[in-house]
Image (cartoon, rainbow, N blue to C red; front, side):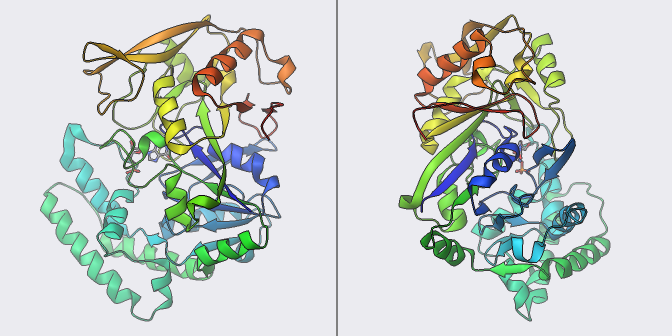
Length: 428
Ligand code: IMP
């Protein structure tokens, strides 16, 4: 059976957690393939909001096995907090949450290095979540990292020490004022490692290979968004992993010819948290309204998200790079009440009109060209079928489908599981 993928198509925070939760009933296994606790996947059901950072979003479904793949980076301290938050539910964590031995560990000094690097950058900072993501992936590609599987070896603490000492020297090199008590941080880390060691470690690529052979349904869950991809995002204002479809192959060990459906998730407008170019960003009342109505604050850092109109040029690029087969439009309800809805359909770039994403989309290079559509007044949050949706919203949907050449299968009209409209489409 093919492995289906679910990815964010913008700058993250598209609502992947909610959709994985909605789709999980169709799958036996949910597998995270990249990123770490920089992600904040929000799920809402039974009137309660749950935020997951590293644990896959299928964890609340009794039947689903959840795999943390080799492409993920794990902070044992944050992981332990996530587990503590789950303790109120009767989840058999030992059998339902499996961790790849090849996943890399985030050390306390990785977090400190992240802070030192950002401080040293001053105004040019990436706006990192400061969870140590960049430094951990640097050690991975630099062939110095500490992996989950190392914890099963007797000498893992030697490896830890050598790495942490190197990091301390690097922190001094940055020559910035970072206050920390490494002894305290290490005590917390070592104690969290003991909790981690109680979980089930697996050779996840082999596990997934066998599961596929047995005909199990697997959904690969991405984190962040395509425009934060280390290769295809708005570099250097990106995260340090491949958030795009190819990342699922390397982050889980799934062969490219085994990929089935690719679900691409986007918001009906655009948001971004952290620094970096954002051509359709709004600095006016419309942007403030999106932020307020959409409750646009980071699930991990609490930072307000920057808001703007939908950028169809960037979205088309993400659809192409990922080979998206099914689209899901989130937060449609947030646009209710806007008289006019704008969509960026092209850019002015170096004196020309272009409709692809160029090398550099800084404000000094590109000016968005908008198409205006009529908005809708109705509150969508209680609607539960396509035939209830306002005509002008359907016009918006059709406009996007025509430009993107991919059908929109789900229209989300609120944060809860139940506020999800499945459209009848020709594709299954
Ligand atoms: P890092 O991955 O924490 O180093 O952050 C790099 C950039 O990606 C920053 O602009 C972050 O705000 C952004 N970022 C990282 N994770 C997420 C996420 O889950 N949602 C949205 N933005 C994110």
